[in-house]
Image 1: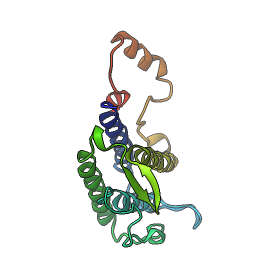
Image 2 (image 1 turned 90 degrees about the vertical axis):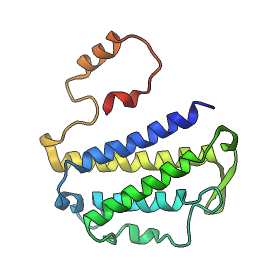
Image 3 (image 1 turned 60 degrees about the horizontal axis):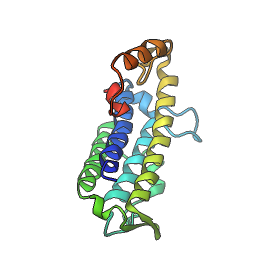
Image 4 (image 1 turned 45 degrees about the vertical axis):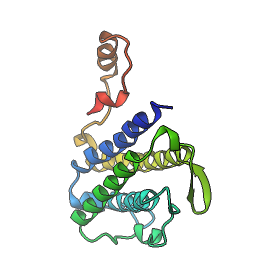
Length: 184
């Protein structure tokens, strides 16, 4: 259990780094692009993630994760102002996450917290949030690749480079390390 928190934090912030690396490859127009009204733009997905994390993580040990001030429906509209406003909201959400994670210890991982009155241990809530983030990170990366086509800079092992990547990994030998270290 002692290794869970650091591993969770690395994994969780890895998803942030993937999204951030995709965002810097896109123009404001590409962030706002929607194939049609039934598909969310990258900006809207980012707005939803930021709103979700702000609600879930703000004082999450003492308040329900679905805050009264959250307006989930508006997260799926261009309600964020400018792209810069959206990026500020995104970073604020991550500051809240980082602060709240620093308050968690091995001793309180089993404490019950609530999301819409459903009780979760803190560890269960971590898994729920991580899966939600990964789901939307995949959407963002997929859309970014479609928008940029061949210009998109790979954020993992580039196509055709698996053999080289594996050789480097096996050349350094076995060791305890987190896979995200390879993609900084």
